[in-house]
Image 1 (cartoon, rainbow, N blue to C red):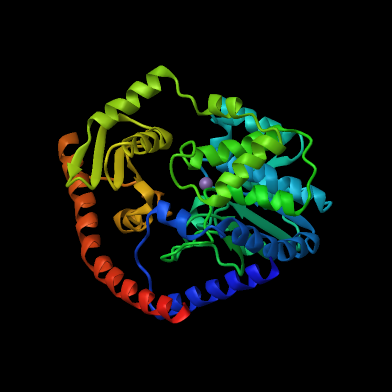
Image 2 (image 1 turned 60 degrees about the vertical axis):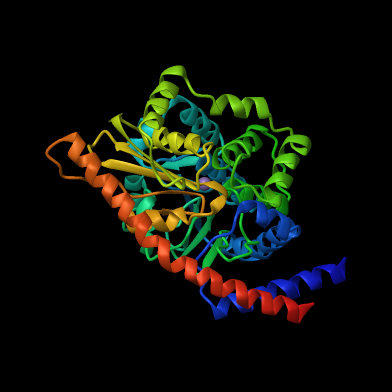
Length: 410
Ligand SMILES: [Mn+2]
């Protein structure tokens, strides 16, 4: 076993050396990941275990810990807040959870219920409260997010002595500046350090800390976070994900039925999502693109994109107006073949990861709805075609290099 681990470490080292030589721009299908990386689960857990010491020191050395996540909170974000909160308590710290007050006052029923649960154990505060009560030697832990503009903290990052990021999304120029990051989102040709969701990372961390979780709802939330980000195990899963799901259900008593209840949709919303799917136009057989005619929430558009992945395609990009009149664009990629995070970055400084991403809300000036839609469709198309050429060439170069290396090793 010891030797086994050493062998894997050497292999990983070698593949990292290769990475340094060539900037790898392309992605590899998820099923290949599964075949190639039987040890992925073990290595991910090892990486998380290595981060534990740093995290412990930072939490213990601080006077006050603040927790936050992305605005427009989803199940993965709330579950991760709960888990990191429990870890803080295990280390004898009572953290504050910083939320966006306007959003908090308007949470849908299920998310409000989840926060109600968190309120039993943690103090929830808004930005005004934070500004009035700032303390010296404070630590911020951001989960399921790494971009400055996505958290409820506006220009407050300098108020913290230390910042920790635990996340599974791509980094870019907007990533919060800190050395203390656990971002598992390996974009190499043979990704290993990659997970389904922040909830998955948080489960392994809870286990590392040997936190005794008495309230099974915290585990239900983590399972819910994983099921949300994997569309119920249909995409974006890794060996570590299945290990995590099975432990949550079989060892920790998480209730799959309860989780599925959260994920069920009401009839009216589902019809609305299907009307958006009906707007689908195809760019070759690779891209399904739909722009809807109603007013949508982020989630509704994301669900249309998730749904469209069931068709034979590489990626699904869906859009529609939000209540402020801006266009929301959500994208999903099948098996991670298209780097959809990058497309959304180019479209409008958005981001995400290889299989799930969004652009920032876009204002489109047009004389009519039809003209707005045409403009947006053209923009999306341009981004796609601009992407097509160069990454493919690079992919071929990498393949040849890899092959040579493999022969050397064997
Ligand atoms: Mn997430």
